[in-house]
Image 1 (cartoon, rainbow over the protein chains, first blue to last red):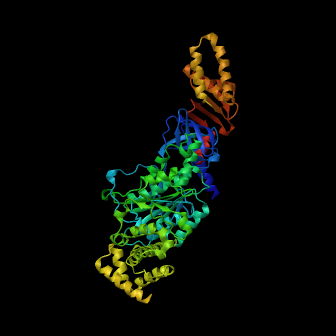
Image 2 (image 1 turned 180 degrees about the vertical axis):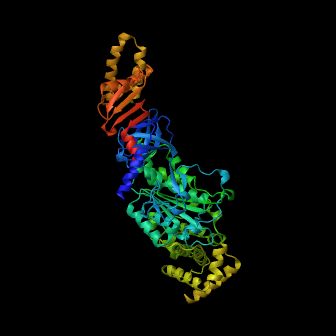
Length: 509
Length: 125
């Protein structure tokens, strides 16, 4: 065997021909903190992929700053191997990632390296496509209005802050308020959301602990959600350049499926850390700092990313890319720089409050501050019909809540409104990792809003929901749940069947 | 550094070009004083090399760096140098990492690599 190798090598050496010629090169004149300053390379393009020839290997770098005499580049590989004097070559290419159907169920880095130890990402490389990390968002002509719902499985969201496929909905809140849990519920729910094409989910972890990413992957595997999910991970321990690139890589993967006419959902967890990574890069590249030391183009950074989420028109395949960016606020301050930026870019926000979280209202959704600007046009008729009054009733309840302590002195009507509000708040509570199918949400909200649960004590609301769901699944799957699921409508026939079922159930509960 | 070496070099060259020959000596000492005053003394090597580069370019020459793997015979070095113009500035360096052969860098961005190191890398990668 070794003889064969030796002979092969000998032949290779004998046949080796190389014509020396002048080549354009750059020379590393400064290296450190993942940044390389390169002299020469006068024709380098912005965002061009460069190759640094280090002592032992070739390390990719990204041209970021094109200055008069130097090029500031971000090293994408092992930055410590980059030394002063190393030669740098241009590639004439911009950064891209290999994408394809085979990525589903895999965990990868933003530069397309497998991180899950399951071997190569593509067994059939010819079926993989190259997608640029930075790509122009589809034009207005290529788009159409959001018209299909993206159910998250969370009652409060699907009823009051509906999200459509192709929408950008921000999840914002302090640390430990359930932002990631909410996004994961949205992924888990795609398995049970029948009647619409399966959504391919991309979870992008930016600057997170490896342990947290591992937990999330395990959760997805246990729930069987990994079969339609791709995880892009740039943990806190990874170079800042990878953290900066992660959301763009996730978006490129989502775009591949969108271009194939499918629906994709991308979760950016979280863009606050992404902004921090970009600030670090910019400061190291000596770009002038602006507000909160972020560079001047921080808005553009997120705008160009989120603008790529869209619903394409049928001529373009009709695919969609829904974006759920996450932003972490500090002490509930939504008026900070990055939160206001992303709020203004997105089509609405889901605001989670730590106060509500500690009161036991989970998801800790602040209904007053949360909004979905375009999702209602994608909401199903059944949900619209049922939840139309929900927001109003909760708003009235919030106004009256201040008088709760004087409840004995209140008139009958106000007392009723308060107890209805309390009931609805209880109904909207939901544990994490237990997304509810949309048809079940419809029937439960119907029961609560039509007064069927008025006499149920608040402590027993959870049991009521559970038993009623069980009851319907056993006895009314065909005449109530399936029609709602298939048609997305609650017609008169189904409604009367539901009312009858509720009355019968109440007699046994 | 308050100002980049390129800026120092450009300012120095332009001032010297405008001044009379008598004043030029005084200008040089003032230039050094300013560098010290600005606290950029540690970067003096870079500034001087930039001035050198500017002088060479003014004469229409190029900055040439010749890298050899080991000390070469004088005759061979001379022969190599003679293939460049008189106005070119030639810097000779020793770089054992090249293993054998020579590497020529022109104006910091055009390179002719005839080293064994490159050939070996190309053969085995």
